[in-house]
Image 1 (cartoon, helix red, strand yellow):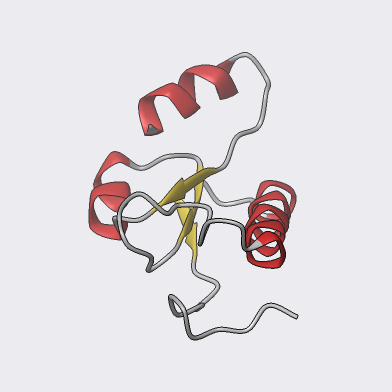
Image 2 (image 1 turned 90 degrees about the vertical axis):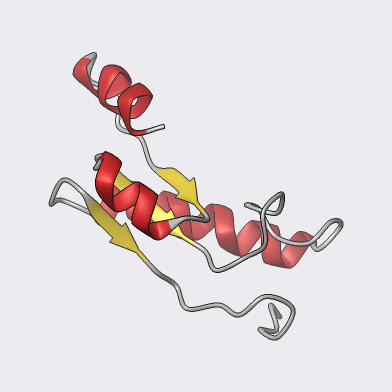
Length: 86
C-alpha cells in the first residue's frame, strides 16, 4: 500500500492508508496511515455499524489533513467491539 500511496502522492494527490498491521506499515513507510486494532477483513469496522464506519472515515480524513510528517501512523485507540460510537 505504501508504494501505491507514494506513487499517487508524487502526482500531488495526498493519501492516507487504513492499516491493521502496524509493524508492516512501519516498515513500508507510507506517507501517512491510520492504524486500527481490528481483525483482518474489517478495516472499516463492523458490518452495518454506520456510526463506527463514519468515525473511521472521519479519522482518516483528519489524518489526511493534519499529518505533516511523512511516515506518521495515527492510532485512535478504539477497541474492537468495545468502543461505543454514539
